[in-house]
Amino acid sequence: MIFGALGRKLSGLLLRRPVTLWHDPRYRLPLGGLEASVGIEPRRADFAAWWLTGSGAIPARALRAPKRIAVHRLSRVHTPELLESLGRPEGLASVFGADPSDVRVDELMDTIRLACGGTLGATRETLRTEEPAINLLGGFHHAGPNVAGGFCPVNDIAVAITAVRDRGFTGRVVILDLDAHPPDGLAACLEADPRCFIGSLSGSDWGPLPGVDETVLPDRAGDEPYLAALRGLLERAPRPDLAYVIAGGDVLAGDKLGRLGLTLAGARLRDLAVARWLDGVPQVWLPGGGYSSRSWRVLAGTGLAVATRSLRPIPEDYEPLIARFSGISAGLSQAELGDGTDLNMDDIEESLGLRPTRQRLLLGFYTAQGMEVALHRYGVFTHLARLGYRNFRLEFDREGAGERVRLFGTAVDLEGEQLLMELILEKRRCLGVPVLYVHWFSLRHPRAHFSEKRPRLPGQEVPGLGLALEAGTMMARMAIRLGLGGVVFRPSNYHVAYTSRKGFAFVQPERQGRFEALVRDLSSYPLAEATRLVAEGKVHLGDAPYTWEADEMVYWLRESPADAGEVERVKAVTHFTVVP
Ligand SMILES: [Zn+2]
Image (tube, rainbow, N blue to C red; front, top):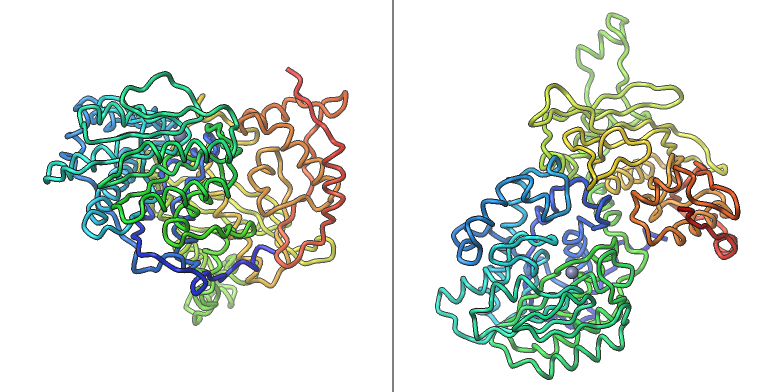
């Protein structure tokens, strides 16, 4: 059960080593479409930080807040043309595979400059203390002096090395690039520095890279060949005075862009081998790439390897956002959320029939102000502000069988108030259990446009906000507070079910089995493409086109009555094919 993992502490069981952990909540890229279009987990740094500090592996006193890197430090490595291109939405959009309408230059540059500042701060501190440092965003190894791309706007490692060289550091630097892709940008930035050694293990062959000790492994090499190649690299590498490790999350099997196919245990063994090799050397660890929802587990595992040398896996049932929100929720009082206030003149006039009755309480509990407090504490308003919205206002009313919540806000560049979120909720029963029934749910990002990079998904009017996980987790918290046993909704399309499949499952095990078979058989397609294929009848079940079944999905908050055996049985015998 998901909530069983809460409060699980590792401290006391582990020998902790002194490390520093560099993190800022603004490490989350302020791009609403990233999760849907690239399959990236934009909360990766947050998730890893929450796990590492929450489990006790890294104490809160080891946390460091990065400062934004100064522009003059960037220009020691990059050309004015490159830096100028990052001042335009189109330039930044091309680096991150986003649509320019989704890019707010100042906010995105904040994230990038903080990450670079983190790498430099970590470098300076580890040189002073010789304690390992982990920066939870960085390792932008594709950025060259005049090139940005592949999620790498500037080269944080080259910028940090140049900065400490400028202050007189002359020691040997070793960069172990263990991201799944080659360090083309790093090689270009550092080619004039003879005291830099770059060693790399990749799963993609981009041709020869002068000055790099590179091993290209075959497709889906897996743990054993990878770890053998790593041992070879560590034997060849010189002894460093300062080391950088790009502990890429894209080595993991199932990554959208990396092809190495490592297990989580294999990635941990990688980090342990490197951590042991670097014992006593000033060292900075960086996450590099990672294009799957599970890449945060690689990053948190890196932190565990460096800080505790532990091989213990992170529990599969630990869901970082659920753990985080339940902690925040525990700090929200009934008086803050509900109707704990005294009657005012409006209430008295209303009760005397002197003014129309307002919809004051949502589900008999929440006031609009209480919901606003919750949205603020969960960080939703902060994220919306980074996407270009402000002046938030909640409104409750009735709609059909349910109660409607709408969140409005103004946009920095649009006229008038915009609808950002709409929910229609009802308390109802499912299999005899009282649940929170979600009739309608939409997240709207009216500032952003659909494009080739961000195709319209079936049922979408405007692009989404990238906050579906937060919204779903908040609904679960609401259901818990109201004493309900679950959250239920009907996914109108394949992509809605797909993005909800972490916590939610179809009520009927046989339907869940068919859904899991569909996910398995469409796994090689990007989500937007997969949902379009289903909506257009291009996916066949047997000889006939498959029609999407919008049956009820449920997220059980107590225990799941689902029959796992039946799910597996149906999944095994169900096969979908895509008809071109
Ligand atoms: Zn990569």
